[in-house]
Length: 91
Image (cartoon, one colour):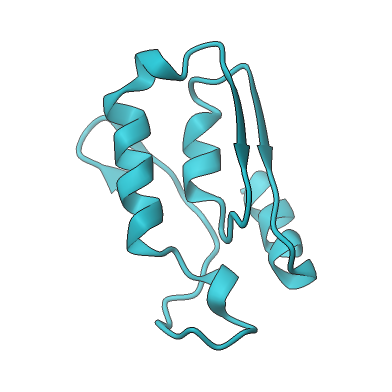
């Protein structure tokens, strides 16, 4: 994901657009992209703060937050998605 020339991030995610229970958290939803853009555009609000992303899915906004926050917790209630988050953490 490229946010203008400000920041880019690579994530493992699905490009299928479905609300099937098994895929919901593996998709980067438009709201996550908008939140990530907001974080980048308003980074002064996030510098040295703590961030918690619940139901993170692929974790786009949470991983964007790691560029500014002093502590970020990214979580999801689905075990498959948690494995994806672990994979993205190392990506």
